[in-house]
Amino acid sequence: MTDVLIRSAKPAAKKRRLHDTFGLYLEVLPTGTKSWRMKYRFRKKEKSLTLGKYPDMGLRDARDSVSDARKVLREGRDPGMERRVLTAARELSAADTFEAIGREWLAEQKPGWAHGHFKRQQSLLANDVFPHLGPRPIAEITAPEVLITVRRVKERALERAHRTLQVIGQIYRYAVATGRAKHNIVADLRGSLPSYKSGHFAAPTEPEEFAAHLRMMNNYKGTPAVKAALKLAPMLFARPGELRKARWADIQLDNAEWRYISSKTKKPHIVPLASQAVTILRDLHKLTGRGLNVFPGQRSVIRPMSDNAVLAAMRRMGIPADELTGHGLRATARTLIEEELHYRPEVIELQLAHEVKDSNGSAYNRTKHLTTRKKMMQEWADYLDKLAEYPA
Image 1: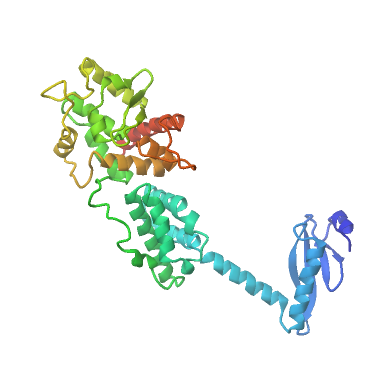
Image 2: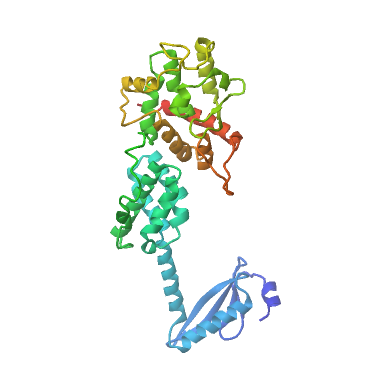
């Protein structure tokens, strides 16, 4: 048999065979598929072994495979059985990876979960866990490897890091229950992340829960300035102090931008204004536009509203402090924009006026990803509108 003969072999109405030496032959199917097979005898029974497909396996490789199979025969073993055992072992190994078990766990949970919750858990694993732990056999993963994975998430959002660790722990419990892990190593990581309950701000991260808060904030019946601030706070997710101290001189309604110096980084920052935000600000400008402050205080127009004005309004509406705060709106936006709108974390972090560095370690300037951020802010405002319409 030669390479020229193999290439020129044409399919016929019935499968045909081109024979080589030591039981090797090429099987040509009517469909045109060409497969290498080997005929052999083991314990007086004639058997055949599939070696591979042509052209993925060439003539030389096919002959090498026959040589290996004949060596197995000389040692008194069945090459076909050894091939099946090896294939089964590979399949079992693939089924025991963290990703395979994680997806199996997701499928088990799906019937009892709301669709949105399932998609968020699926997104969390796909974005933050599977790229790092997915290919590894779950029984071989160590606690330090898991900790490294959740610390990557912690750099973006501590609350999400806690949720990530919790989900990994649930997958390990499932793996232990199904006999593919001996120990839930997440139990060894208790206390490895700083608490987000103390020192961090309450923030709903489930759309259904946030929708209820939005409806209450949108229906506030107080002063126009506080009412506008309540609508803009989740839409712009600026730091509460920056929002209440906003000045008309920094807002360009025609360009749909709010430009100011970040109170945290002390650097220029740009907040693209969605069409909904522009409408709210234009209406408010009719009332407060002659003054310096977008949201003037009730007692003095030369001073901005108090830092307690928005929080007090939330409490009067019945939103408790352990459910939502002004700062918590930033965490809510960060989580939902990533999980529901699927924007990259660095784009969201830039819009949050956090220090974000590129691959060279240089801090991004204020205009980085600005086009994408404008699109994101409009999509976020549209998403909030739809969210507020969720059935109560």
